[in-house]
Every structure is written in structure tokens, then in C-alpha cells.
Image (cartoon, one colour):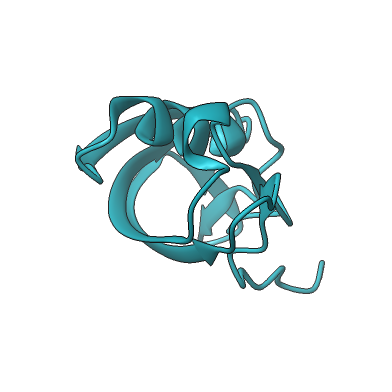
Amino acid sequence: MLKGPSTIPVPTFLRNRDGHFLMTLRCRVEKDGSTRVQVMEGTGAPDLDEAVCQSFSGLPWYRAELGGQPVAVTVRLVIEGSWENGQEFIDWGGRIPPMQ
């Protein structure tokens, strides 16, 4: 359902160390493809949670359809990522589905 992002910014205070995170987002995708993203299970670092949440907010998502008609859905998205000392962005390894 998701079209992006390919990277997530590492908060400034975490850039001077290696890191890894696992978190869960609740993503409400409306009929028009707009989204509302909330943290379900955070990382323990509020700035990192916010960076991840903002990276997934406001992006175009594929609309869900049932019987050819758009429907609103709520999805649970588990995100895992890591970075190395000095790295500014996390390549979270997400996959972008093909447009049909």
C-alpha cells in the first residue's frame, strides 16, 4: 500500500553512534489515499519515533479497494532499521509495490 519513503533521517543526537530500531506504526489510509500515521510501539527515543512517523506521514499511499471501490483501512506497519556512526539517513529496506 505504501509508495515510500526510501530513507528516514537519523536525529542529530543519534548520529554519533551506531544504532538499530524496531517500531510499529498504525496507518489509517482513507478512500482518497491520504493517511494518518501514529506510533503504536515506539523505539524508546521520542525524537527517533517522530522522525520515523514524519517520514511516513503525508506520503502518497495506494488506496485499498473492495469490489473495485475505494475503502478506508487501518494497517499496522512494522519498521526495522539501523545506521552507523556519522550516517544521516537510514535505508530502512522498505519495498515499494508496483503500481497496477
